Amino acid sequence: MMKQKLLGIVSAYDLIKKLKTIKTIDEIMEPVNQYLLDTATAEDAIVLIDDVTYGMIPVVDKEHKIVGLVTRGSLLSAMSSKWIEMEENLDE
Image 1 (cartoon, helix red, strand yellow):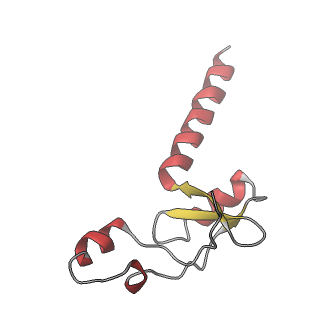
Image 2 (spheres, rainbow, N blue to C red):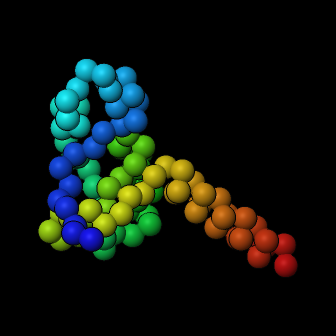
């Protein structure tokens, strides 16, 4: 698989709303101003997720090629699992 540089982001809402009026995705693509490098920590993701308006943070390598995506849902799931684990350890 060839890695592509991150150019922008399109929300599902915008895509559905404008599906019949656009010829190409880049017509509605928004530039990505906030992203994480693949060397970032989970704490970096938690801090940054509050600042993004589209509910996800692209993860890029040093050449700005996309390597992953962090979503609010994935962070919430990871944090709740960790919290439950900590609570269980306190009960022991």
